[in-house]
Structure formats: structure tokens, C-alpha cells
Image (tube, rainbow over all chains, first blue to last red; front, top):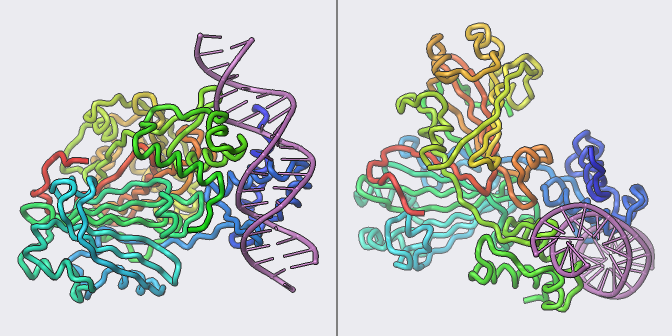
Length: 257
Length: 257
DNA sequence: TAGTGGTCTAGACCACCTC
DNA sequence: AGGTGGTCTAGACCACTAC
């Protein structure tokens, strides 16, 4: 039991009080100067302790307001059912999911031609730097930034389906549009990773320090070859993904938390 | 384009130099006092900038040594094939996976009876606080802490399969053991989340600031009801999960990065 | 205007690693 | 012994929010 530095003692004490309900989610912590007096530490030392809790995602701060205990309402995304053609959905699977959860979805959308980044190029089995269609979505739930989604399509597919490069939404959904052209998506390869956000991601998702992002890469395959690569970036504090595998007839529709 | 505070300018400059290869993964950054001179900033300001990069997982520091650029060799875990009974594996699926990747696995193991935490109790559909068997694994790859895995089994299952509570390993694997008793696992429900590690997790996994953990919860079902709940905690910087869904005959065995 | 957090400084002392 | 990062202080000034 070695002696902890003072700023850790501050962080640990506050963490305990957050855990035991002294400061419930959404409430405000005492000001830096109050804590400074309470712990007999300089303001900078208290700030180091608070900084620890911020970097662990427990609290957040805003200038002029103070420190607030984080509250999370997580959103569950069923990745194995999402976009499943045997569960027909009209149009956008994301909007449907969010609306079903009683929340209000919105998004901004853009389409561009872009040289394939190495990551996507490898998955699409095209040369890095070759042309791809990028369809990009910035998604919000109840006006809170939620996720970004970037789908790359290889150039050869564009020649079969020119509407892929049209700037607007495709009403029936791109998957259906491609299926109507005879390019059927019959399998996915999903990859899931996590890391701290880049400054660009932090800006788009409006996450502060201490909130990791969840990276979901879905590569869709026809019977011959990969036809698309979708990278979705979620706020890790607001999202959870799940997969159903095998026979789950014993599982009710709504499990407890 | 508003003026950035000085510590952000420091962080941004160093990030660019890390990205463009001036400081490749594994190399050392200049010392705080050198950077202080270079950026005409106090040592504390430089430390703030470095702290940003640490909290983003780009660099790490150690006393007396300096700052090192992080290097990641990620390990891919195929979650849809893992433990699949139709791909028979003898014994421990984890060891097999790691050995196949040319790495050396090791683990510590313990079994105890424990009141069910609320999280697991809900998934197993038993009362919170009722008795469960906890089988806990602390796993290492090449002696680097890799993941912890905690599986809870409900009490009613223990009466059918008393060996669950035996302290040692079950040679043929618990899944096979249960199947031999007529309790067959025919489906999984997987949940994936991410967050910053708790102090306890940081200790077990030896992660520094800026590395999130990946949380994988697998609830296994027989034809009647849930029979186990496994929570695995991974170092987010060293692991990636993937799922194969549908027909992937077009996908070769080894895809590029 | 008063109170909050955000930035920055200059300096002190300590703990750890390498030589 | 000399260099590295880790902790801590005291004080200054700025930017934002509330009233």
C-alpha cells in the first residue's frame, strides 16, 4: 500500500463519491477552488485529479459552468439484423432503428468520387488510390452527433450502377438498388475496433477527452467479390453493438439491462 | 481559423511529425526541456501538449526514459467462428487461436461461487445476488496482459453439472462438458461496448492513459434458457473483433490489412 | 460583476533510469 | 552524477456563463 500522489487521492475520493451517489449523473461537482480548500491542495493539483476523471469519461467540464457527472443513455444497434434482406426494411435501416427506439433521427449526406484509402482498398480488393464512390453520412439522434458512416464502392461497380454517384439519396436503399442490377450482397465481414478519437472525429462527434470511439467496418460481398466497404464511427459512450448467432428462440425480445 | 492555445499547437505539431514518419512507431520523442526550447513554451505547457497525445493513445511515457511513439500489433479474434461447435476444437479455443497466430499464450485461472452481479443476473434471468459459479481467466500473449474473461453460470446448472465448480480446468472444455450432460448451447447473444478502463482494469491489463477497453459480453442459450454469461475485457489497442455473416465464399482466407 | 474553468509561467523537489 | 519524467505550488491573466 504505497502512498498515492495527492492528485490521485483527489480523483479517487471524487470517483468514490460519484459511484456511491453523492454526485449522481447530471449533477455538478464543487468548483475547483472549493475542492482546493477541501483537499488542501493547489488549484493545479485539483485540476490534475479532475483531469484524470475527465480522461476516464466520468465527468466533463465546460468553461464558466463547472464539472458535470456524465450520464449515458446507450443505444443498442443490432448488427446481425441490420440491413438483413430477409427482414425487409423500406429505405434507411438507421432511421427505422432510431425511430423504433422513440428517438428522432436526422442526417447530413454527401457523395463524392475519391481515391481509395489503403484501408478500404485492401478490403475491396482494388488498388490503393484507384477511384471509388464515397457516400458519407453524418448522423444525429435528437440533434446529438451520433456517428459518421463512410461507404466506399469500387469503380467497376459504378459502371453497372451509375446512380451510386448521384448526389442524392437512393430512395429504395443502395443495397436494393444494387440487387435490382443483379449484384446481390450475400455476405458480410464485420470488424470492430476501438481507439481514442482523432481531432477530426472529436470535432464531428463532439466528444470530449475520455470518450473512445467504436469503429465498425462492414465489407459486403456478392457471390464473386467484395462490393462495398462501410466504416461507421460511433461515440463509444452512447452506443453498443450486438450480434445474434445461432438459435435464440429461448431469448425474449426485450432482455433486461 | 481561430488561434489555438500553445499546448495544442505543440500537440498538433508533434502529431503531424508522428503521422509523417519523423518519429516512427517505437522511436523516442525529444525530451520535455528540448521541446520547451523548440516551442518557446514553459515545461508545463509542453507537458500539457504531450498529455493530449498520451490521452489519445499516440504516445506513452515512462519515468527516466522519455516519451515513446506507440506501436500496435493488433490481434484479430473471429467471434463468429470462436467456439463454434461445427468447427471442432479440442479444449481451449483461445489458446488455439493465439498459437495459430504464432504467439505464445498463457493464463491464470480461478473458480469461485459468487452472488450474481446485476449485469450478469439480468442476462442469465436469475435474481441479482443469487449464487453463480464464476470461472475467471487472466490471459497473456507473449507475457503481455491481453484480456480478462469472467464467465458466470447459474446455480441450477451447477446441480446438473457439478464439475463446473471444480477449481481446475475442464479438459474437454465447459461447452463440451455441458453438451455431454444434455445442455446444449445452440445460440449466442453478443454485445460489444467500449469505454475507458476502470483503475482495476488498468491494473490487470497494464494499460496506460489513452487506451480504451473493448467489452465483449456473450450470453449462451440452450433451447430453453440462458446457460452462461461471459464478459471479456480486451485491451483496445491490441485487439480487433470480427464476425462473418452469410455467404462469404468470395472472401479469401487472408485479406490484406 | 462575480464566479467558473482554461491557459501559462517559473521554479522547486522527487523518483527513476543509464552510465 | 546527470538526465529524464512526475508532482506540486503560487500566482497571473483570459474566456465564458450567469445574474
